[in-house]
Length: 120
Image 1 (cartoon, helix red, strand yellow):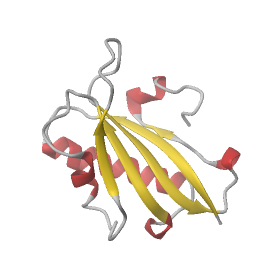
Image 2 (cartoon, helix red, strand yellow):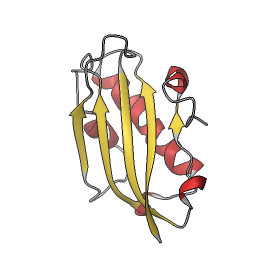
Image 3 (cartoon, one colour):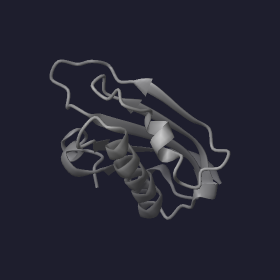
Image 4 (cartoon, rainbow, N blue to C red):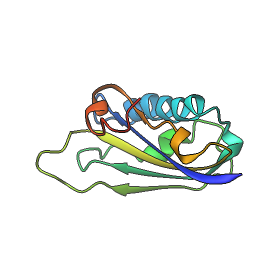
């Protein structure tokens, strides 16, 4: 088993705890699904949020999933003038037999334009 990093992002529809609670778990589940992983494969998850998302922590929204004792942490994304608004980014550390080149990074909706080289 190797440790791999999986990237993901989603643009949140509006700055509300309800939107985060609805949209962040979808991203996490899609990241796991596309890579054939279960929650037990998770080592840790780092979330960043753009400075305009202040209603709740993305990690709190993810806690609706069966993450158990998986360490989660949040940080604020750099405020870049031309950056996309209301974006939660994820760096998920997992145990997997996938080669680095087989890992599928997940950019949902409008965030596909952020990393055209990685988006599936």
